[in-house]
Image (cartoon, rainbow, N blue to C red):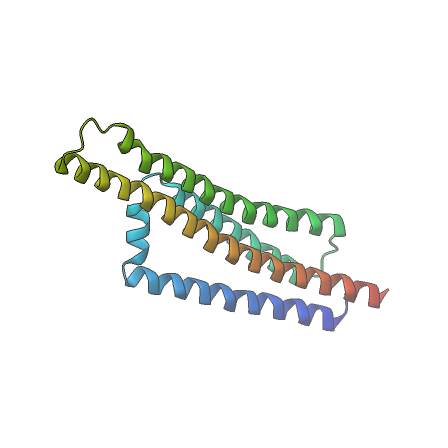
Length: 174
């Protein structure tokens, strides 16, 4: 591998660390404002925790793969494609888990309506309180899934660009 290729891939790792730092800083700001707590407490299905765990795991994998792109070891193109497919699968999965939370939230939201036996003010007030909890699950899981999907897709597109640059450099050196 040429020196310019190693320099380009090292630059990709540095840029990736900057991107991850910005994402984590944004998460810290949201945490400081109490918004992360509101999201995690409002999601009674706990699917947001699962989405965040998948994002954390795949972000670690993303950093590992960016570091691997920096190495001078020979990497088969098929391996690179397989690694990218894992990232795209994770990005699609967090989105679908978020949508699953939406469906669960709607079910939780509509369940109190079926349990109504009378239409007095106290019963309706209790039903509306229970409905708002279901709506919170629906919205929070959707929000978490969408944000995690966008970030993961951005991260793995970044990795795909680094891989493509490595392959182009390999062809130029041959």
